[in-house]
Amino acid sequence: MHILISNSSKEPIYNQIKDQIKKMVLSGELKEGDVLPSMRQLAKDLHISVITTKRAYEELEKEGYIYSIIGKGSFIAEQNMEMIKEKKLTAIEEKLTEVIANSKEIGLSLKELKEWMTILYEE
Amino acid sequence: MHILISNSSKEPIYNQIKDQIKKMVLSGELKEGDVLPSMRQLAKDLHISVITTKRAYEELEKEGYIYSIIGKGSFIAEQNMEMIKEKKLTAIEEKLTEVIANSKEIGLSLKELKEWMTILYEE
DNA sequence: AGTTGTGTATATAAACACTATATACAATAT
DNA sequence: ATATTGTATATAGTGTTTATATACACAACT
Image (cartoon, rainbow over all chains, first blue to last red; front, side):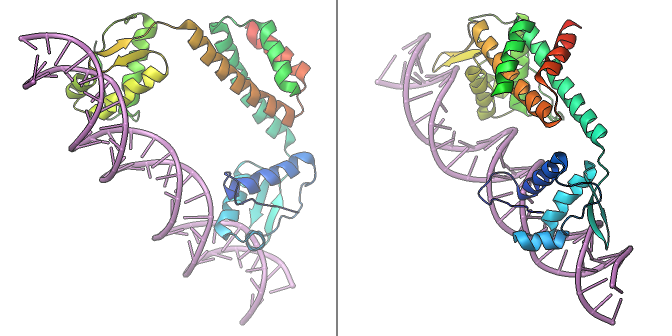
């Protein structure tokens, strides 16, 4: 369970924490039931305030990645992969719809759009 | 040339002005060379500061909708379709990049993405 | 030339949002 | 009981956004 933060990064600390934990969940490095460092411990390790780790964990909980229990600790939540996927798919569809609307406005063909996407995908 | 502002709106004043002028340009109500109210006159009419009208006009100029000449006034610019296209292309690229990032996270392949896009495009 | 009407630049104020914090409170484990 | 866990409240520091006053620069018109 290694979390690093960069003070020079423009990303806020709580976000750096969130991203790293999310990544570990998505990669399978962390699995359902796994214990996370306590807010206080993590705060001590990173030399930041408890409130900041609290914020990171709180948002991760809202997004369904972890859950916390007073007196016990914080844990990786049931991997509701389907749910996460669903959310991302919805987001993708929304953006894709906008992209297509914009493309049609300026007469960008489906073929051109696909070619562009291929280039971006492979970068 | 009627511009109205709402003080209760959450939209900033300079943006309300911008949007209304843009709309008139895009609808054809205002055409190349048409004279806009002077910054001072508009400020007086709307009971706001010149700096605010200045900001609206300034941004409209940056976006290519109008141009201003010291001592003369502000005018509707040549309708530069190319420029508008360029902007849309940039917007498309940004969204497409996000779409691809999201797709990779959940393992959506380029092929699947293309198929999806085809469906959305043809709807 | 002088006056008036244009747009412009600088420095500032006020409101708001965001990030991070200290400190005290509440529940659980031992 | 005591230590360890998460939680709630109130606050400080920072940066961004919105709007302003005031003085400057250029052009048109007597």
